[in-house]
Image (cartoon, rainbow, N blue to C red; front, side, top):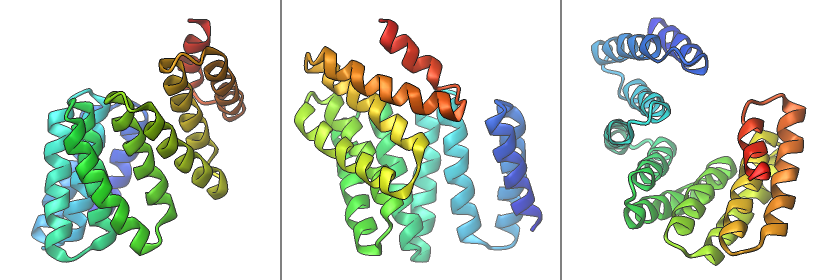
Length: 210
């Protein structure tokens, strides 16, 4: 429970942008999980540490911790955790420009998540696949992945992710030369983000202004 409390404090610090505090609490949690021989706790903590490094733009560090999470989940036979870690590994590969490695990891994650019936995980992984396909210039496959993810998030009632997918779909349409369609997607995304009072709205405003 002490380790869980440290992880909760770390998540709060992360949301506030207090990354040094987040790393400190995650390290405390990790030390406790090691003493308790709790592989699942260690795996989840490494995955969370990866997210903090991502926010700091340190994608190799993020990938290293996601890989540690994957190794721990795989070793313990935690299939859901393994699938989530595979998606994370793929996402960080994509951030580092290794798009084919990203596709390989995310496609493996997607198969496992579909077997588990984890619709939220499938939606998140389809988004990762769309991102990698977009960066490889395969806009049709990117739109297919993004569209599938968007439908799932809408069905799940996750409005933030609905807005995120609309933003990315708009970026892909813009890359294909479909300026009007892109602006329509971004306007829908902006409406949702404004209703949620989410700071990501500013990014979408910049896209529309540009």
